[in-house]
Image (cartoon, rainbow, N blue to C red):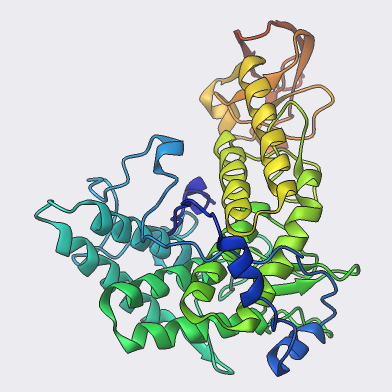
Length: 422
């Protein structure tokens, strides 16, 4: 999926916190009591952060716009949407429109942000109107089950068949409806937020059934996870989990229910314990914990840093700040290291499956991809065999010298296999 799932809105900012920590501890005294908490604990959750939540002032603004240098006001002329400003997602496989709840909630968040900062903009009211239209569209596609609202994806992935559901989508939708309620006071938005929160009680089923929706998972060690891609073998995608926690936090700021605080603190315990395991020292962090692979883009690493800092802001756990700092050091080292760009020629060979990678690495890259964070020294490039029916012969391995802070370029020229002579 495009990195916009990592650039999705954050709807709060950090302010001075003198005296707030003591208040937050008082608020947390009863968090372990009550039947909803017992129900959650019955799923095996054994780890809850000892750090109480700060009650931070909340603004409906996206505080990550500075981080990516992106113009957050929703004026992009090439953004496909209907006449109400609701995003239209085109399935890359079928070419047909399809439901994509994260795309919708991301766009809604940008409109909310624009509304809060564009005080003198004549289009200000239009931004809130668009956000409301997106919220209404989400309610139209929502599936209600056992008192919960779920937002389905309308297209297949390799590991998921439509309709499928995502903890990331649920968390972002929760943020959107909390903010729509805060700005408009409409009860239907508060009701929607309550029902979306209920979806976090949908846990990994004991007898696994792909038809049963779930977004929450408890591992064998009693740690609670929110899964961006719920599947039989959970992947533990970090940024999707982080964003979902921030959605829960916004809901807790509205409702102050003990069960929402319990889930946030259980999530914070998990992230604090496992965040460093996503680290690749000197390079970009993993997106998933299950696979020892780097994130597909540098921006995912930036998202990890930003959200670790945000999670630190809401609870004060110093380990979250420490790991964010380590990720930042890795980012600096990664940017200072060498870079390699390889072109696959001709284009027909790439279309037939031609790819490249450095020897010893797992991931294959397309033509023109720039690999960052390469250590100074001699490296070897290898090329992937194209599809057998394409009759393209892969090039021989190439040696290349990488220098710190420099760009290196190479080309892999595939040749047509000669037909056997008579």
